[in-house]
Length: 410
Image 1 (tube, rainbow, N blue to C red):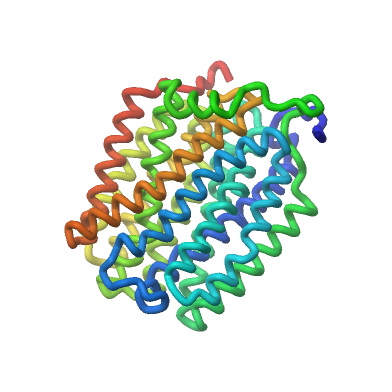
Image 2: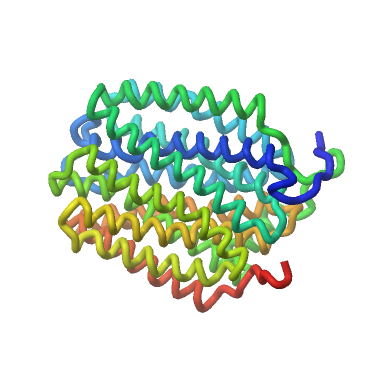
């Protein structure tokens, strides 16, 4: 087993490594962003999803969430044994068939299958960018590191969502998705092979991580009150992303909104979320993790609840922006809090378990939103469900989470 030499901690001291990692997470964001605007809006006309069947539409989000959640756990454990770089490269290899599947898909089932591959890619690649940054950051920089990482990733999501909306309106949508997806995947794979450096803390030759996977899974899932609160919060906040990914484009299309305008509304959410993490992550390094996390849940609940009460594109964009601010407050700081609690020798595994529960939230949320919308006959019901879930999850955090980062002791 290869090891890496001990290096000083600090983002400035490891700027080259940090920039490599940011480039990778930007590519990861582009990959998932390619499916955010165009594919849900084409589900009925291009891929044969039954009109009005929200549960069927959400199947591609469910498949993504189930697989990504599982792969987060697997990749976290693998990264502690074989290193961060190998897992990243494996993730990009898995992504290579996705553009071809989208180009050739005769039915919605193929899109669901493509999202299985996307889940593996995201579980391996995005996980490694986060874990690698924690390897090189000081404890008082974890909020900053996570905030910048998620800014780059979700900036990529937003840019790809907007670009595909424009290109799909000018050219054949499938060809546009194929070309951009293949270029991004190839560039990312080459960059991972040629430029991404290993950052895993040194371990003895052939020595497995000292703590078992079973023990870490139990600790992060239920044995620790703090980890448990963070894991449930991670899962519930993905209800919002599932909503913005699949339901919002369909809801807006049903209101007669043009595809390009839908792209602008959804990209507002992504851009505000991404850009705001440049200040929300460092904020938690200064004031602690808990206040911005709890505030973020409350703001998200308000933004989501406002959506069905509005009736104009500018107003919907405003609600999307409010939701993006809320996500920026909670998202990077949940990850940073897990990093605060985990020991370096099993941090990759702990982050993997947290991300397992977090991204299962895509599946939980998509199933719940789809079933509620179908059962009620109203798309608006999905918004009310998501807002209520966020409010209750934020209350759990307020009551059950102690502060994990005390700046005066950092």
